[in-house]
Image (cartoon, rainbow, N blue to C red; front, side):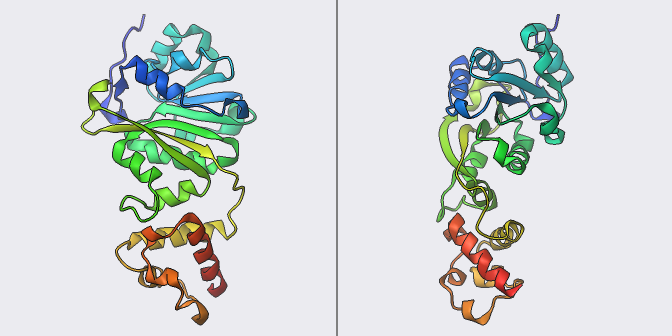
Length: 260
């Protein structure tokens, strides 16, 4: 019988050991009427899983790339066996997994936590809610508002489609092994924006250009885009990227597109 899973550094594993925090993370799922499935990423030894499967409002699925974890879950959560996925979340084909909307939750491996969210973003119209554990600095960056030094590319691209709540901080002592950084739990809830009122591919390019030289004003950082003369004195160009909201970036993208 598999009764323990060794945390593997190469997989970025740090297993949460505090049951109260585990339950609190699962309780962060608040829009359960909007989906019938919950997908847990990196369940490890199932500290979140036990609380997820206790909720009858949704069907729980788990995915892990760690063979040892998969074996442990099959032994210790036999009722879940048909919903245990041995694989890589980043390569998962959601369309083949289940129909309809689903939520994503997990004590995410910190080395791929941002990639997990961008995978979610690619399927934003099927994912109404995400609750996850992140490195504290990453969580702060995702949840940051304009005019904050941690506000950046990730903040803008995710906040374009999700409302983000920083729920709570978790001390490193609550994990085995303890990470060298503090952790935090955040929640993303899908907003009502179905499509940005601009060219979304160009929006991403403008946001990235703006923050890639974040100390410069936008007049300089987006110089590669040819703005029409009537826009050259616009107030956005005198500001830095961190001062613009999502809506400001949408407007700036529309200005840029006129000149493309």
